[in-house]
Image (cartoon, rainbow, N blue to C red; front, side):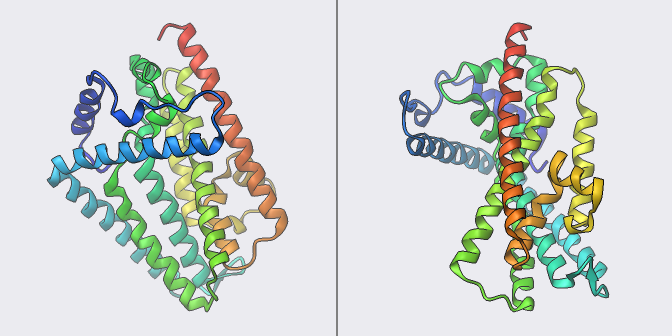
Length: 301
């Protein structure tokens, strides 16, 4: 969204013309390696891709700083709108104005981090499936999904988290919450968990391209759900709507659950259900991805 599409395409094509991947990609973990070794390996890969991407973005400095300005301005405008909207609102289904501001700030953090790290990589999946360019990822000495997801890191989108941090800090001070290390760790853990859940949802939407030629409608549905749950906290939903937005299409969890935890209203049952939903969607996304690859290979795409 921030970088010019032609520039991004040229960077991607340039990368795939390289005779070998960066040296950090060569040392794959041996079969049977511990989970810690695999995690450290992928963190090194992420660091290498971040360094490459940052260097390439800085080659186009005008576009790089334009991305900071445009993305930052968009969220400042949204911050002003929400500040005006909730100025005279006492509560929303029991939530105070400060809790609502914290909710919006949390959603801004999740959204900004998603766009910074994996959004632009995953949304390119349908096009790569249709054009057969996915083959380039399947032949590299690195996990193809990991490579695809994080190759298009957009450092400019990191600025989107700044308004979110301001809102979270302001709301915390206004609510008089006693901030402890355990509270911060729990909140950060839930942010990472929600980023994982959102990753699963974005991936599942794009994996439909393995079976269907056009998936534009799913992208539009995703955008509408994200926009809707950005404006309305999950505590508002009841009955069938809550089942849909908490379990079947759990976008309502993304900012609601971390906000409930930090403000001390998240109970044990909600903790367990959040963990269960995230685990279920992670397993489902992994399964659908593998089945999609089988179909991709059998059709000779």
